[in-house]
Image (cartoon, rainbow, N blue to C red):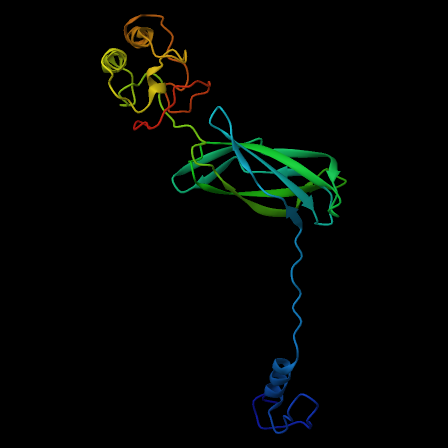
Length: 251
């Protein structure tokens, strides 16, 4: 039978609903469905997160600590994070990427675990969206995801150090005689520079005439070791000092 013919079925008005007599059967069923109350079941969260604070470290990295409760119904044995995270303007790296729960994090939310990791290469003021997953290990040792979510981590302004190349005083992405001249002019003529750390060619934490000599020796003295990191690639100063680097155009 064509569901849209004028063949009808018997019906009568009921409390709260109009009589739908004379309607084609298919349309009648559709109307009843639309008039019936619908119950929607909200999806239950499979985990709970605490606040996600980010703190600056002296080496320019950012430490992140957060609390998580597992509500998935499955015990979680590990938490996985990505190695790299992309954000507008660059790429950040994360370590460690695996947190092991021993004993396992129960799936009933009865235990709150603390997870800590570090971020390198993020930009001041950026907000990183970092996915993570809780992993369950079955009796055979196989891992399966029991829950996942995304962390929103705001990077504090002024937290991450500026990348530079050590010894590259004139910021042309290499070391040469002009770099030694910039260092000497900074010391004796008060030349302004935007990245004092780059002038510290021996990473002593101070700018002296030795830094200019080290640049020249790196160029002309056989057997002279290259400047300490970051060199020859851009990077953040791995040693703490009070020199600072406000801006470096070479990276």
